[in-house]
Length: 197
Image 1 (cartoon, rainbow, N blue to C red):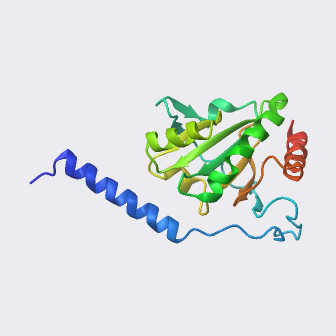
Image 2: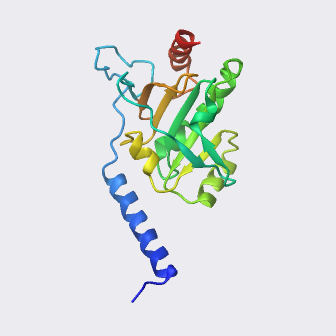
Image 3: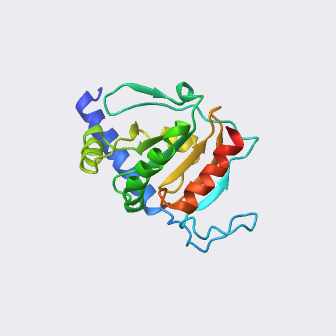
């Protein structure tokens, strides 16, 4: 006997909730501001995030997701401009806390055409839209409805943010909350972008 579409939809929703709960249970908060990178460089002044270089041997995962209007956004279409790609969720307090600083960052680097793209993890369009509207965010926002993009990019902690050069190649990943409007973070980003522009 076949299952009705309603029963299948309900099962998918339950599985999605269970997967999200499992992710929340394994959520790893960012290191403290006194953390040290693998190469021994201090993250002091750069927030509590871990800053990890993207391996030169690691391929860039494809990324093609719907925005809040249902239009497909494709990472490949953004070549020629630097990007900051942020994986986040509305249930993640550090994610919500850093959103306003992405607005500051995008305005600060407008001359270099930097674009921030917020990739929401496994939430419906309307809850995401309500959050974006309540925060008056003008950032590009796309939805990773099934978590496949987060998995392909190796996201294990929220928020996780990738800085991508104009050729479409990731340069680094910031794991954990960052104040993207702070002068220390903007200086780090400026140095990265000057090296590739």
